[in-house]
Image (cartoon, rainbow, N blue to C red; front, top):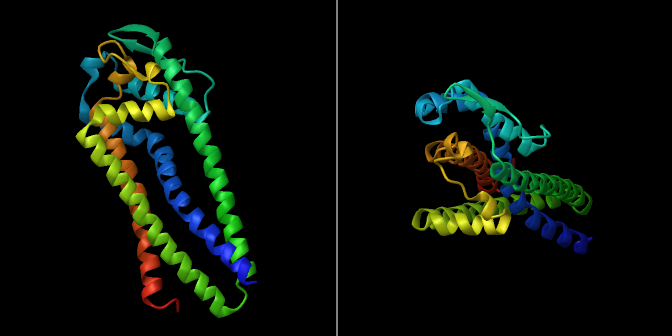
Length: 236
């Protein structure tokens, strides 16, 4: 039984950081599909004259991109009016880029299901290996501490990435695309790329901030619960 308890703790320690990272992916999925928030952003940015499109067309184009990324649409085809002329929104380079983004999203989705399965296995194994009331209090205390360390590690990692992006965004952007996407298909000229025009830096920044506020708020709530549990000596 002691060996099973050791395996249980090791699996919990391995899984919890992955769960915290998956919270960020979940936040991306939620934030990217919020049409009401997107409309508020476009109203605030007032980029209609720059893009040549009305707000409804920009929202439709953005949401088609999101639906394609998530696998809810088979193509990137969406018609918009640009300075009064009807045309397809996205060019071939933008479509190729979104194929890469879609594949990355699929991989992250599969990873999320694997992490969920690991969490369920961890819970089942913990219950099987810790039978008495005191043993279960002990594994809960261990899990609470592991969760706090996991949150600290993920936050530290994100702060390091943020510092890198702030100091040298070009190298950060290039490395990210080299590792996860195709760099060549991810390079656009803002003067001709309508995808970039409807995703200006201000929109990108606000969305990233929203993602981190959601994920950070969730992790802060988890940390608070874990902290209270540990402070009370595992008696709640």
